[in-house]
Amino acid sequence: MKINKKGLTKQPQYDIMIIEKEGMIEMKKIFLDLDGTLVRFNVKNALNRFETEKGFFANLLAYKGIENINEMAKNGNVYIISASPNIQADIDKMTWIEKYLPNIPKNHIVICRCGECKALVLRRLGLVIDKNCYLLDDYTKNLIEWEQVGGTGIKRITKVSDNSTKKWKGLELKDLCKLSTLIA
Image (cartoon, rainbow, N blue to C red; front, side, top):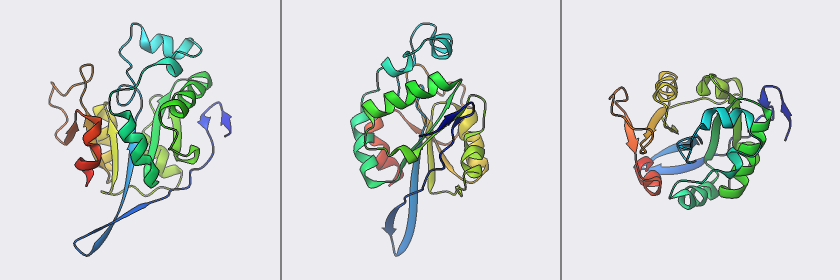
């Protein structure tokens, strides 16, 4: 894995899960955010500590149901797309992924910089995003951008990140164990 100032530079190879549905073939890919989506990011001073404290992210806990996500990854259609402020945070995220999601191959992990549009980052890497490309994220702005390029967004609802403002009108998910059912 190569890391430079902009994050991971290795171009992922996109494996695909093919599902037959009523005589049609659909290729589904699931892209997952980490902070607040799979990782419990609701600790005191989290954003500041994330940027400055070595090992901070690596030691955060996973949400209930992470085992189901790791099991889904065996099909080869699960990817991580997560933003990070710096190289040390990149390394911490990779450590966390290795601990909780060992079934996700390293070439299915893309770490971009905070503020970058995740959809555009993936498009620059050669991925065509369509309705069968799902993004599970807790940040509405990311989901809106994802759907603007043709993907399907799923809002992760937790105690920290809800949809009380009702800005998100699409799919929502509270229980990680139900993700495979939601996209079936």
